Image (cartoon, rainbow, N blue to C red; front, top):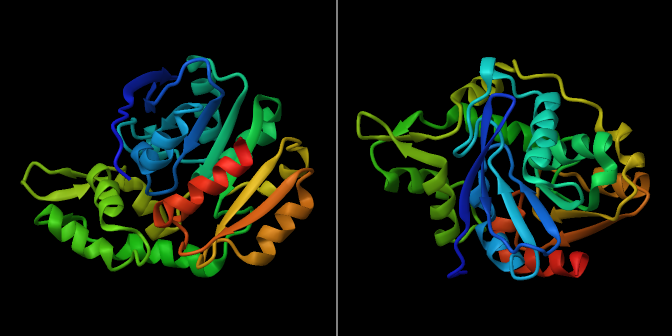
Length: 279
């Protein structure tokens, strides 16, 4: 899905942490904030952003420890710190009433943020994640982070390794994801761009305790769309249906030909569903 639209790279400092984001415009249009997942980055959304920015002012954030944003001091990747970052970011860039779209970790951060700042959110899209994680998907992601090499000889080696784990994602989309997820190391090899402490916490189960997000959902009064990949192993159907029951205004849709990385696995159908909800 090639596009001639190019975003502006911007950075703001929130309580000592530089947070990088892509500003796709368009000024004066309804604002949309996009939040990536555990191993994602702001460019994960490029197909979505390029389409949405025709009718919306789109901002894609690199959350702490990912992309071009600073790594967390002391390895603090707690839910509370992500929410504090979001609150400071919204204040810094003037997001006082907006649409929020979060995938996986970004979806959990969206739910946590909405629990304290529901009045700011016009509509909320939660992609393939819930208050409860399917143990199969959570275990798979942890195992992938345990197993993945620290470095590769070439970028093509990175692509070859990751392509085995992504059965739906097209080659151009996967190559883009990996281009912004990796960096060339001083030794000439390729390694991961995100803070490796994130991996260590997954490997050693030393991450921060997760909040009970079921407590937040009843207070989110705005329309909420839950998007689930039909082949996901991360958001169980029972959990997704319970979310709809608990939310005051929740709706569930399924995207075919998609697993957990819904909007990268099947961007065309995801974008269509997103427009149906937002427009």
